[in-house]
Length: 264
Image 1 (cartoon, rainbow, N blue to C red):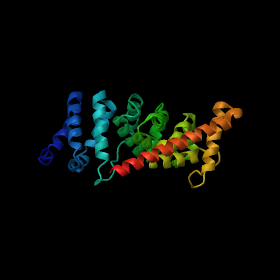
Image 2: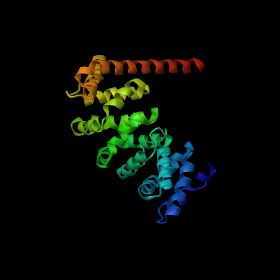
Image 3: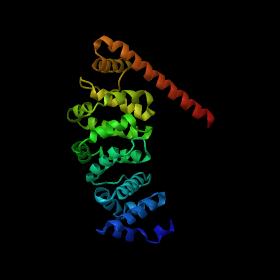
Image 4: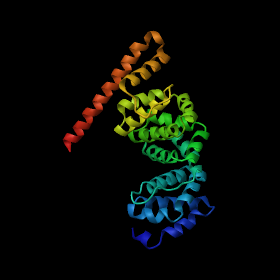
């Protein structure tokens, strides 16, 4: 955009520093618009805007926070630039926004993308678990999100558990993650399925080996879950139905992918 090459970004960054909410949020909206153009991203990312956008995310109005999230998402998806080094204090408002939005929405996809980025750092992981309902919000997204937000949410949970199984395993299990993860192994994208299987492996009672779940291990997890829900008397029947449903969903998704490939 010519407006960027003409030097529009520095004045917008200066406006972000103002304590007047209206000025800051108008500037955030303008930066959001500019950040949607790939060639503008390096200039904006190096201008100091990301740090100030995090401040809008933490203290702005709902619309200001939404604009800040979307702008940060745009800047974090630049293929030519390294990932932004964002302040982990952004995690708390991100979690709160995720709680409030529809888990299958485009906004949830952007929010979970950023949370997955934060899950890669010690500070980010600490923030995710210190926010009330942080892990639960990710678990609910695994259950009710779009294929994209599901993948990001399970990626964040997997990062937590991979960083310290002893620290995070019980916290994730406490929020009832197993049913959504089992469903994801059948219904998710290939990446999400791999992540779900890897996380299920880490959530097992016995210490995990460095491999993904085998079919027999998955059957055992499904049986244990069925026994917990319906009791041991009905566990075999319930587990069989769950596995059949998972196989059916997997077959349907494979057929859908074949149809898409044949039509292109």
